[in-house]
Image (tube, rainbow, N blue to C red; front, side, top):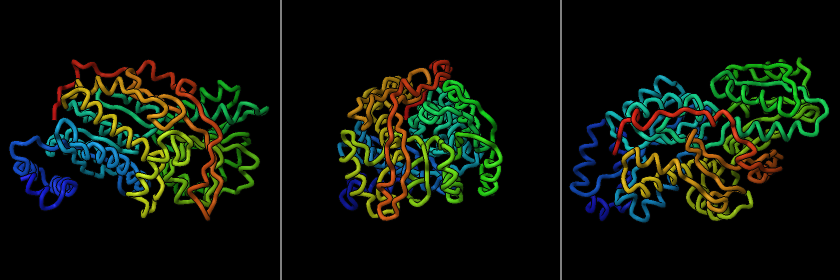
Length: 428
């Protein structure tokens, strides 16, 4: 039946048809089985990311990176002779609901692997369910330090740099030649915000700085102007932000540019999806892992491929989220190929040894998976945003970069993963 569908609809359309059927009740899997008959069944990968709320645009960028990698493999016959089908679920930002989504995808829909999430709390919730069943979970783009420390799992691999990596590079840059080193922490009230601020404290001390206060803001940030008034009451030379998603846009849309002239504001990670849609909003100093205009081998070709497919959309240039999701998905599929099986234990061992040269990864230094923490170690770029309403894609300016060793999160050296003996076998 698959061959008949391919003759009628074309190869890529079969994937869309199967994904549509899978998005309904789990009984639809029987239809997929009959469509493939005795041939190799498709390899089902679930992309899980909040498609509504403040990370909706990030989720779209994340899915695009996964699609680009999957398209490459499907164009040459899939993986282990199996076509790869990507299905999407919205776990929302509710951790309990996200856990149930993960449970249903595994027990009812029989997915092979999961990737995505964006939000670190959702990632922690869903990956715990995956570990229970032995399903490999690829965290493409969430950056809480807890994801590769206390919330790490044998079946989870984290591909974004963490806030600890970003803040270590940025705070050194901001404090290095400054005589007065009073730092105010501005922290989002969630696991990502608090763990990022905690890591920042040690980096501030490394540079001889002093934390003079901390303003903790609700995750929904209902009153950005009120937050800025609170900040103004505390005398500080540097303001270290750990605020995410659209909250950054709302906060900086109300900040007086003169404030940024008097103080150094360090914003941790700022994704392309928070910059490009708001080109007139300032961002003083922040970290990224990749940009469309970084002068590294392979970048121009990757951007051209992206723009050929998505150049007519709101995000007509790719950013760090798409880059991370592309390589995370590619790492998973490559690991399956190298293992020669979908058995999770064999695939995990291959993922633990993933390495890319600087040229392959489009960065300035080689990237590699830490087998202890399951966190990808990679280059960090220090950047600033110089608003250009006429050409917003050119607003990002790279000021410097740091090697994986320079931004290492030391707590990852003592991460404790479940043993293979305590990790159930799962072979989709």
